[in-house]
Length: 119
Length: 232
Image (cartoon, rainbow over all chains, first blue to last red):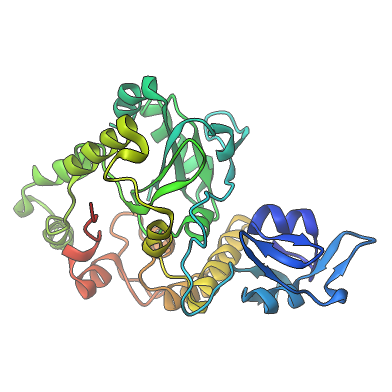
């Protein structure tokens, strides 16, 4: 997740990472990690990314020259890419139309998600 | 090929969603989608988010998702009953090729895939759903998904920064981030091939920019391991 500051809108963070900010902390599936009060600014609905990244085990990488940050996915020695079999939301543009498409719009059908590349 | 599979199985409640992992964007991908006459959603993933979200590390890779949006097979090599790319290589006579291309073809021919078994398993799942022996339990799906150590998570962050800088027009600024992504997650072929391709689109060969190349890295792991055998 790309960031131009260390404060990120809660909604953007939730949409991209699959974690949600709840009264009990930062939650994904059955897991909730307590968050210090200062991590969430309820007035601006933003998160302190550095605090959240450290708590959830997400790497925060900085390009100093251009002052851009990237937040990586939650990690750990025994973690896998999937923490649950529930498919994460994937929202991307359709090459044919340019319109945004949500994987979740196919609920009710069996889906083969097929990754390919031109290179 | 996938369009044929889609036409065969779509009436049974099945859909294909293709995702192009391509920093080159619509310009790099649209001709392929048009040529395939794709009737299914054909998405563009410039940042290779699919790697981060689903644990994809090579292409082609498929993920099976059931009617409740539950994954029943995580990312693994996926072929539509045949492997047309491999078949086209089989017809090439190495003696007619430049030596470095011929050397690549020798390795390509060692790559193992089982397109017929994959297609048969896919059809079985579409027809039998959870009762199919190929549909995995949730714990097995998670356990089979790619490891996500701190290094792999950092690789994802560096790759994303690199593709952002490249698309901003600053290709040189992308390179250190892509080099770091390669160092942190050497088994991720989408990060490596994408970056090599910008320097040498024909061979993805060795350049001054990156430490590896397709031929060097394939030989290092053994071409027969390029696609892990699908465990049915």
